[in-house]
Image 1: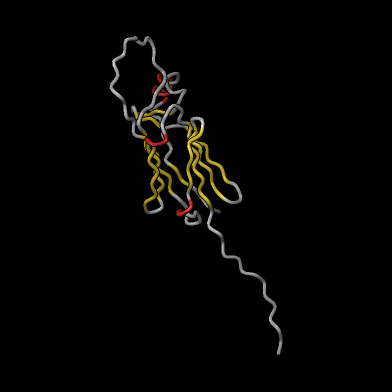
Image 2: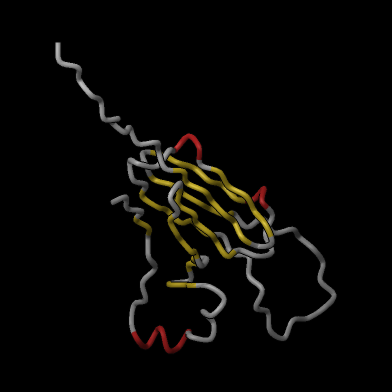
Length: 141
């Protein structure tokens, strides 16, 4: 069976969880590190990774594969604007992040595809074509 391992953010304690429950609803955060929510599923032909990252620009994402480690990162590039309004509460976040996934040898690294649509970064990781041995009848001489 093909496996896809990924880094899972962990909470340090129950107190931390309870103290930050409401702040962490939009995404997972530990030690002020932001981890966007990711759905991973498998089809017959590929794996799909779906990152929930609304309000970003596709140019700010960086996706690399090095030694079977897939890394997806987002670098927050803030523009310096002069604000005339004063926020009472600000929940929209576009923090930088970096997530890494260990890829199985059955994934075709050269054919990984990504698209950013309606706030979702969707990666398609196609499986390699497995060499199937066709049964062959041997004629008796």
